[in-house]
Amino acid sequence: VRARVMQIDHSPDVTYGDIGGLQDQMREVRETVELPLQQPETFDTVGIQPPSGILLHGPPGTGKTMLAKAVANETDASFIKMAGSELVHKFIGEGAKLVRDLFEVARENEPAVIFIDEIDAIASKRTDSKTSGDAEVQRTMMQLLSEMDGFDERGDVRIIAATNRFDMLDEAILRPGRFDRLIEVPKPDPAGRELIFQIHTRDMNVADDVEFGALAEMAEDASGADVKAICTEAGMFAIRDDRTEIERQDFEAAWEKLQQSETVEAGESP
Ligand code: ATP
Image (cartoon, rainbow, N blue to C red):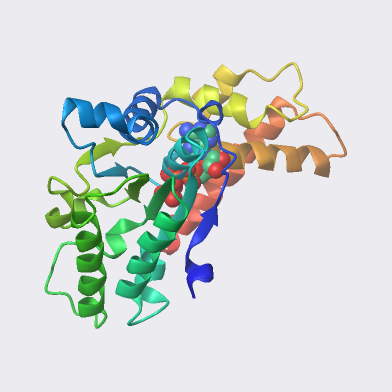
């Protein structure tokens, strides 16, 4: 069971250079994760506890997972990932145990960064919900909180969680000593999109007529993940057209296609 829900990556290969934009977010993540892992004595000397948990929040596909992986890479820490939704949906009755396992595995693999994606799945506000799994979800969350509370000798384990639904979170998890460092990860601005286009075309055979600034303007409101999808799709358009060089028109066609598929998806959802 462990192996299936928990992804352990002993040396994630994402670096800070792979992340476009997000300078402030990167700095904050480094301060709160890197420093305690690399210089725990500084915190001892100053006499304060490093922040316990970090919560990254923002729309899908904006680089939250990348940030967590990059900081693990930089500190030579194992990266241990678990999705909140998997904790509660896949293994009914197992959530609390999986949380315990998660922390145990992290201690066995120190230094480690625990990344809990979709934390909202186990830490949503208590509504008078009709969902039958509710008690199970509560138990899973209580276990997470108690692991974090009883984590004085936290040592070389840092915890990062992520959510697209910050407004839904139960305040209990945001209290001091828990996820008390909030970092918003927004969609990129045009300058950020330009950088992300550059990053994702690094290994692509791009024609001289392609201007990244213009692509960034074109792909208004695109997330980092959207930009990546545009680049891959542009390559596909070139291949279909029997070319090995990707032209501006390919990026434009790719953006058209992405927007259409998103409209369809949006139209389909209830
Ligand atoms: P989700 O909330 O859906 O889990 P996320 O914010 O964790 O999304 P990531 O998994 O980090 O998003 O990003 C998905 C992919 O999109 C990355 O693997 C990367 O290729 C691309 N991407 C997203 N944001 C950026 C960025 N700022 N710079 C470069 N690439 C990015």
